[in-house]
Image (cartoon, rainbow, N blue to C red):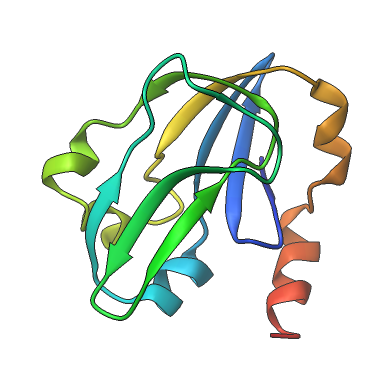
Length: 121
């Protein structure tokens, strides 16, 4: 199950690890993705801090951590094929983190709440 932020990142939990990506809504708003700047493995950050960067034909945007943690893996395929996000936003992950504070999960929205939120934008 994916959980969402109001900045349009998703997180999928597996124990104390979270796989993170961008929502379909965010990708549609950005348009064709042309570049993804990935973080370094070992980099740490707090919830809501910028961890990566994405560029599209329409805009450039930060990618924020939905949860605090340390980067343990990045999707290197995105360096050569950033368009993978356009092809399958919900199925293409950007990075994985080891959670520092699992209680933060309570601050994220489930899919129904996120869909309702996007309808207000």
